[in-house]
Amino acid sequence: MVILGAGPAGLVLGNVLLAHGIDCVILERATRAHVQSRARAGFLAANTVRVLDRHGLGEGLHRRGQAHGTCEFRTEGCRFRLDYGSLGRGEQHTVYPQQELVTDLLTRYLDAGGQVRFETEAVAVREADGARPRVEVREPDGRPARWQARYVAGCDGRHGAARRSLPAGAVRRHHRDPGISWLGLLIEAPPSMDAVGYAVHERGFAGHMARTPEVTRYYLQCGRGEAADTWSEERIWDELALRMRAGEHGALRRGPVVQRAVVDLESDVLEPLRHGSLFLVGDAAGLLSPSAAKGANLAVLEAELLAVALVDALAHGDPRGLDGYSARCLPFIWRAQEFSHWMIQLLHGSPGETSFQQALRCARIESLRTSRTHQDWFAEHYVGV
Ligand code: FAD
Image 1 (tube, rainbow, N blue to C red):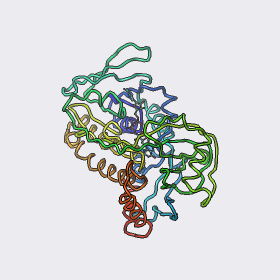
Image 2: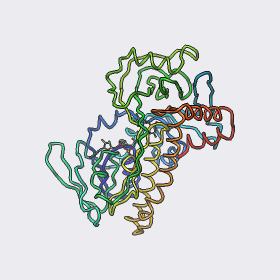
Image 3: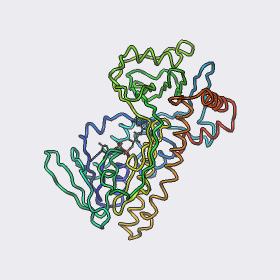
Image 4: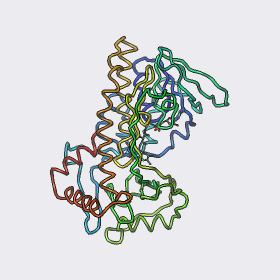
């Protein structure tokens, strides 16, 4: 079994396969240090924690993760909190930085004897429609090499070799780009409040999300095509304070910006998630905007579903799970997409928004503030995958 990519998807898959005695190798383009320090997600859904626990992979997050169940909305003239941990199904998030999860999963996989080839870039997957697909790679010294296996799992994200290798017409790509971008910031400072903060402002969205007691993630809606380094620290703090209405609701805890990147809120889903012996998992299967923090959670869920199906096929000769993999995953993916897009509409005025659309958005926020039924629905979808 060849797995492309050592992100959450590839590492969960590798760990579960290894625990069932399935021989596998992970090919990873980046260095180990880079993989272990790439800060992205931080909010793990209750079901993600259950999946990780089922395979003995949750020890670190139980030791160092923090339970989280409150979010706060700030708009013109209104501020309200939802204790989503006690609404809906009563489930909470666990705040645990993605790079720590990846480090735990990688350490566990290597300690169990798993193989990872770092700095090995998959260039193409060939003959995926046959029973012996081949992965062509560039070795760390630049030389070409190849790996062959019964199956290949494409866990190498949206720009990876798995997607690139799909022949025209093999899968359909559903794509949506609402034309909105966020400047994602990691700031070396404690969280400014004990809730996820969503600020809706005429100058654009601003968000606050805890990561660790020392580091906090903030988001600022920015212009499409704007470069992250054109934002001075002064401008970042001015905009955050203005949009989060810090004057009214409390000052933000400042610190140096340690990472910044512009993220376009694009989404897509490939269908089906299989081409012959090549399977797509995580961001390679479908890209979710970070508006609802679902991407890493779906990656873990899909990796488990594929791992179980591969164990049935390779250890017990039963291919039914593999045949049904795509149909099992797609409803989860579409539900997550639906909620992510609902969040996008709630939090932003779209480019060219009419006064009618703006009033609808305000009505939706008001309904969320006042309707228990709406709040239960929100909580179920916000924490669920
Ligand atoms: P990745 O984590 O992207 O891993 C893919 C791996 O493949 C990488 O290590 C890459 O180096 C490697 N690779 C790529 N190409 C090749 C190649 N050709 N050959 C070999 N290796 C290759 N999700 C949440 O659930 N909650 C959140 O709070 C959240 N916040 C986010 C914030 C930001 C700013 C961003 C950008 C994303 C966020 N996400 C969040 C999304 C989440 O990070 C991704 O959905 C998740 O990382 C997907 O995991 P993956 O394993 O599929 O892919």
